[in-house]
Image (cartoon, rainbow, N blue to C red):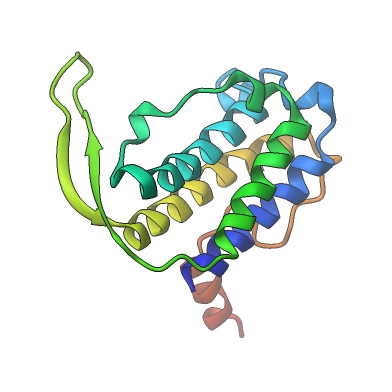
Length: 168
């Protein structure tokens, strides 16, 4: 279930990134507080990358993502990363224990650690992706309106279900 939800979201992202013009992918947008479409894509993808790298180390730390500027400026590379993540998810990984590590201080400080699992972190990545997709949706509607968005792009599945249940 989690795997297919994550794959569906990434497939939606793939459609939108594919439709984005190269020059718009790395252009700062007012709707994104001068960040770029590509930066939001990179940020979202790197959370998945951190999680998948954690299977080797047993520790996931999203603060230690690479901030790879190539992913945020090269649309084709971003598409390749999306495809790689989808391929990984198609292997239907079993759940396993992880240690979640983060530093919630704005200053240099000690990392906080707690028990987690691959499934719990995958669920977090899904929610995180939806949040950034919702931000991207605003930018697309305002500045990149040539991009056709999938129907539920940037909308949580619980919201989709709720809206369906309240239709008359």
